[in-house]
Amino acid sequence: MQLLDGKFVSEKIKQDIAAEAAEFLTSSGRKPHLVAILVGNDGGSETYVASKMKNCEKVGFQSSLIRYDNSVTEAELLAKVEEINNDTGVDGLIVQLPLPKHIDPEKVTEKIDYRKDVDGFHPVNLGRMMRNLPCFIPATPYGIMLMLQAYGIDTAGKHCVVVGRSNIVGSPMSILMGRNANPGNCTVTLTHSKTINLKEMCLQADILIAAIGRKNYITADMVKPGAIVIDVGMNRETSATTKSGYKLYGDVDFEHVAPIASWITPVPGGVGLMTIVGLLKNTLASAKGEIYA
Ligand code: GUN
Image 1 (spheres, rainbow, N blue to C red):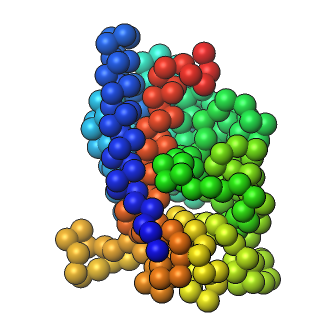
Image 2: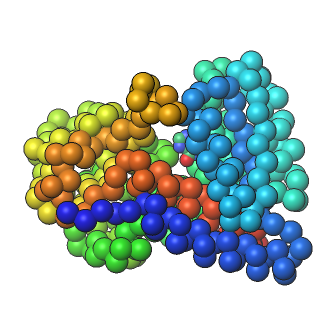
């Protein structure tokens, strides 16, 4: 088994991003600028947004965090999105999900100017991705593609089984792996909570991508020996033994799956770090006008 090391790859790509951001600063007189909106106090969201902001600073971007408590109205949030859409000093805007129940995430997602939608969640970006047009690709699937590329993994002709059909990961991932591109050119099966014979499906996977959101859901008896295993799980549990007070678990039972996999991502230290890289690359591309002029 070989590790797909998110720490190593993300640090390497961030060096390249930092160099490009410095060039951009020299030529334009400003830094790429990402704005994040965070509503409420969800522990996971707090951690992920803090990490996004910290990484922006590390690569020489400007970052701004706008916080609201859970009582913010949908109208207030939409008005703020509109304001940022119109701010020419902002290249990328993300609204961290999930949002409180009284706010419709679809309305918020559609309100974000697709030209600043560096999460790649807006229907325009998803539609353009389907048609192989320049667009912002959702950060997690983008990060996974960069990881496969970094390790020179040949995906062409392989059977990729994606577990989970979320808008953020599973669905776009299935599209990207099936595209006529490299990485890509896979035969893709998208499985989900209603799939009857999930174990048999997973056992056919040359590349297994687990994005189901359940701790240790993929067990060793579901994995074909020699498979490439990508674990998107970020299952957070409180822990008395860690400094932060919580521990992160993947969707894959790493201990028992790793010995039979050819390649595998650890959690933490795998896909999560690559997601940030995807977001940073989209923000830089936005600043440079590479996707939308
Ligand atoms: N919640 C979980 N993943 C994401 C992400 O990539 N972007 C945003 N905005 N919210 C998320």
